[in-house]
Structures are given as C-alpha cells and as structure tokens.
Image (cartoon, rainbow, N blue to C red; front, top):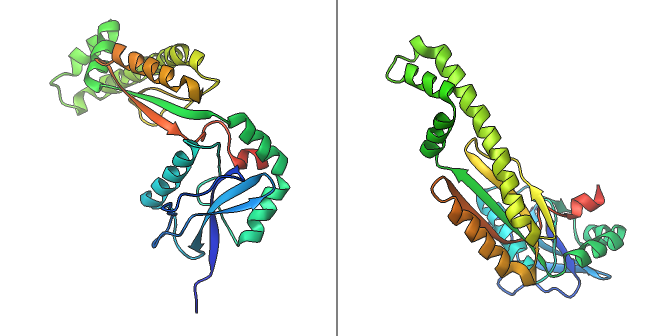
Length: 251
C-alpha cells in the first residue's frame, strides 16, 4: 500500500514568488518545493509522508535555508516548523481564511530582513571580572581554591550564587547596550531569552534592506569593542522569525 502523504508548509509569500528549480524540501528523500496560490498569496510547500518522522537537524536546516533564502529576495511569513496539512485544498483554505491579514503583514515586511546578534562571554575573563568587582566573591574563591569540595560545599554554593547574580546583572546591562547601539538602525527589535548561562546578549533586529550595510558595520563595531570579553556572532539575513509568522496572525 502506498504511503499516505501530506504537504509540509514552509511560509507564506506574495503570489508572484516562484521557488527556484533546485529548491528541495524536508524529508528523506527530500520533496520538491512548490507554490500553491490563492489571490495575492502563495504558500511554499513540499510533499512528505504522513508517517515520516520530522524534526531531524537536517530537516530544521532545510526549513531555515528555504525561508532565509526566500527572505533575501521577497517578504515571507514563516509557518511553524512541522506544519503538515492533508493537501492543496487545505492550503488554499488557509490562504483564503486569512488572506487580508497575511497580505497586510507581507506588505509591512517588504524590503525588510531580520538580523540576530548573539554574544557569549569568555568564561575565564567573565569570572575574573566578577571577582575583581566583588571582594566578597573573591574572598570566597580564595577560601575554596585547592580545598576538597565536600569540606567547602557551602562556600562553593554561595560563590556560585554570587557569580550567577553578577552575570545576570551584566547580561541585563549588555542587552541594553546592544539595543542602544543597534536599535536606532532597525525598524523593530526583539530581545531574546538566553540559551546558555554564558550568554551576554541576544536580540533580533528587523532592518530595512537599504540600511543593511550600515547595520552590519555597526554590529561589527559593537563586536570589536567587546572582543576581549564577548564572542559576538551576527546571523543574517534571516526570515523574520522573531517579528511575525503565519501562526501569530491565525491564533
């Protein structure tokens, strides 16, 4: 018996957007990416088996690469990863039911792109800085240095709490500094939650395309000023994951 299939939806785009001939979708083997159109809109989709497990790292990369590549040339509303519907009629129903909201959101995104700036502390330099600024923490560090863990358990717990609190305060200050430095060059900003205890700053920026070079230069300057303490990565251009998605407009 042939395996039942459905359509994996990647994103919503203007109706004149065409997938590139070499675009491939998720799954093994990957499906061919197509556009299903309704009115002023189109949905980028590919066929997948309904029993096929999705969620492998390769699938997520494929999903992001397709959306990011699309966003570089046209506005796109990302659809939540893993959204699968039964067929073309279900896609057309989605586009019809939310046509005006999707179209308005795409108009707002025209000519705009997301960049994400993520900074992570160098652990040794971070702790050295915390101890230099906090004599009580430095004293505890001296007490536990070279001593058995069991005998200094309480001091180590207290030291860990003091360092954690200090890092949180530094992170809050660094995120403000990041938004102050780059926010004026963006039309919208979206602070992001830390993904690691050593995260220093993490935020997304929606940027007008004609200001991309200016934004990138400012991000590079921000990173250079902090290179001894923070490793900064600039990700983009990306689809506007942090600013609008089809699901946000539906729910």
